[in-house]
Amino acid sequence: MHILILGGDGYLGWPTAMYFSNRGYQVTVVDNYFRRNSCTELDVGMLYPLPSLVERAKIWNEHTGHEIKVVIGDLTDPEVLRSLFNGAAHYSWAVDSSFTGIPDTVIHYAEQPSAPYSLLNYKYANITLSNNLLVTNNLMFAVRDFARNTHIVKLGTMGEYGTPNIDIEEGWLDIEHKGRSDRFLFPRQASSLYHTSKIMDTDLLWFGVRLWNLRVTDLMQGPVYGMETEESKIDERLKTIFNYDEIFGTIVNRFMVQALVDYPLTVYGKGGQTRGYLNINDTLQCVHLAEQNAADPGELRIYNQIMETFSVNELAAMTQEAGKAFGIDVKINHLENPRIEAEEHYYNPTYQSLLNLGVKPHLLSAEVMEQMMQIILKYKNNIRTDIIFKGLKW
Image 1 (cartoon, rainbow, N blue to C red):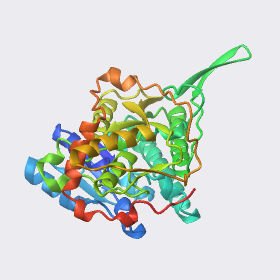
Image 2: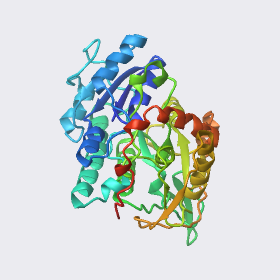
Image 3: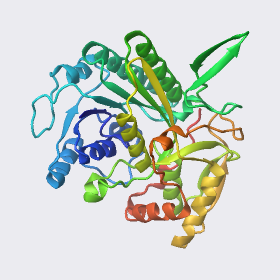
Image 4: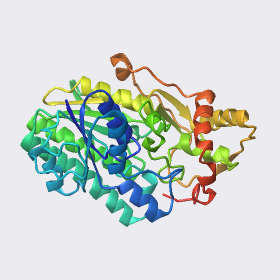
């Protein structure tokens, strides 16, 4: 099976590439270093330095004998994306540079992934919208024109739904109205332009499913935490990107770094904001199961990809508990909320389907946090407190 991973240098993309490669798949990854370049441009840095994507692929090959083909290119250019299907791709690194063939599955991570980034100003909003929508549109047309049987697995976000005052179903809602009934995409109400772009991605692909019988699985994922996977343990240089700033860092990762440098936890407002979370290892399980259980032609299959829900206050309390193992009295600072969002709300999403397919959750606990903090501690001298919180506002 040939897996094409768009955004293969990213926080989730690189671990996914190793995961599939380690299980015997042919893997090709594409990236333009958007995340790395943005970290440099915005001066938010990363916890530790990383080899280039080409260097990572070489290190992986040296240790395992497996090949991860690498293409460095901007997928907003339709010809770059189409080259991955018509045999014209230019490989920046490969053991065998011959065309692997049309991918059986495309895993689409190639998006600007940050809500704060999308609202820095109109320029960054434009970058978010143009990057995310053009890549998705280019992918849709490439599959239509070259590979209609290829399964697209797109990473969505639970943020598409917002925080409605009703239970959140898995993507779809059955409606009865004036004696008639129909099935619609669950109503969505994003709280950032990033999340709005993800809604538009879903709509684009739903259009392609309806018109051209494309096969699409949309994974509505919650915030991910963690840095270590089975494959990254092979060599320290195979770790994934780890951010702890307010732009690219996810909340659990940020809180653990803050605790270790005695920086009061940055709880926005009342701290009642509740979301669904999952361990990075569970992301890998979910994507693999989505690939193994492909959508049918003409189907948009949607899973809510979370394992449990927490409020910000609950995460802060767990971080405090984890800090005790390191002799740290973790403090909490309720900041004036820089975001426009509900700080207390109803939140009850359904997320049973992936569990039914066989996901074995890695649940979050103070002990799990302690293990992660132990890894972070090795890089404590790299942590810059000046980039943890700058108060970027919506």
